[in-house]
Length: 393
Image 1 (spheres, rainbow, N blue to C red):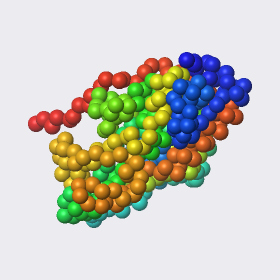
Image 2 (cartoon, rainbow, N blue to C red):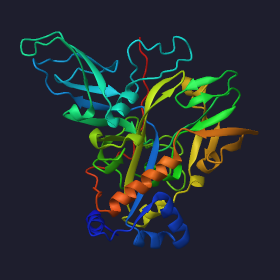
Image 3 (cartoon, rainbow, N blue to C red):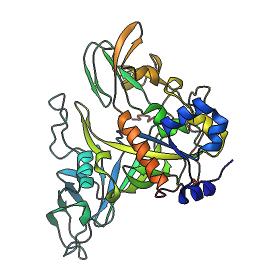
Image 4 (cartoon, one colour):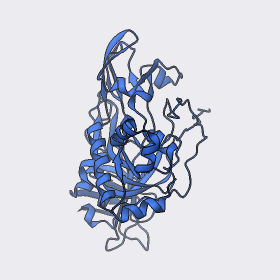
């Protein structure tokens, strides 16, 4: 048994043994779980991919004369201004004004909130257009100016739902092409798409939320951030395999960090033809090896992780609950799999290359003593379902 304090002392003194998720799995296969639990202090996990439930709070500071902003646009993208005078919240999937969307289907969706967030982190100029009804203490009614992230008092990424523990594999059983947030799906099961880093992914290495909880430190696009809550749609009450890994969506995390400290290559706006815009993020989470049970979970391999194949032409949009079958991430990463009697091309919306890079970057930060761990203030819920919206007249 180890404690967070003991591990942090070893990190500070330069004596901690830190492995990436892929290195830990090899170590366990070579030496066994017991020795790995004794020898290794920290394992770095990571993922990189689209995370639609993301956004940021920005504070512009007060103009002269002052203005109580009631509506604003950032490079033409509306941001929510129903908070304090010069604060706003920008969502990753927000479209800019007058975007044709899907009026000429399939729409291109070439700009939106996720792209503004990328530009901010890159230090590029953003145009601010703001409006107000005017008050006696905030008399200014409109303004137009330009700013960069360095001009802001705060730029805080606040993401309600990131790091899905597991996710669907999408396919299309209909006779026409589909345009979805899982990419383009060809007719008659012409392809499969998935979005997970599999055995590198944080919550798949901590399936029972023993180390990742409220207050846990995270590497969010290069900035030191933390988990501030369970993520929206957190649904840990689900089917699990013998090694405790969920066979469906399950857990999520709500994350926050300072955008001024982020690295541009891990904050990328992205578009989905016929669907909309989003934001691709890189996230790393260190897992302390406190005991053998945690070490055992860190040994999970892609062959041990199963995902549900869902038909996005009927079963997904109509929420029938039907599942075509399950496949392992080992199968998915082979790029062509045999499913339902046919060979099908597979593509990933998550970058394994980027996830491996983040694991190594986080490992380097810990080894330098620049990234200490934090014990959770509260655990994530371990038993919780997800309600559906009932449409009432």
